[in-house]
Image (cartoon, rainbow, N blue to C red; front, side):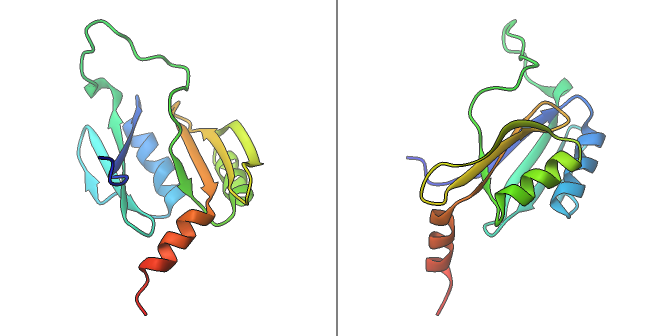
Length: 137
């Protein structure tokens, strides 16, 4: 049923600031740019990473989104979890979960971006194994 990651969408009350921050973090401009939404294609599989201006969030029948970070953490593979974590903190993210070894060299961490979203990073040996299998020759 679940075949793979397609799009991760974050939200921000200041879309322009979020776009600029993630452009700095990712080192690329968004490929898709609208008034209410921007999207980047990132990584080896060009996964879609979007940011929605929170004023365009659907009405959830009176349910208000919490301003506190929570929910599932999406971890993005990085080559060096500690270096990536340090860079994100340097760029203004707040610590959420410091780097730690989950076992067998799966090293993960998470930060809160300046817009209240949880951003997970992980050095993931399984990701590298899958990537290697997909390379031709």
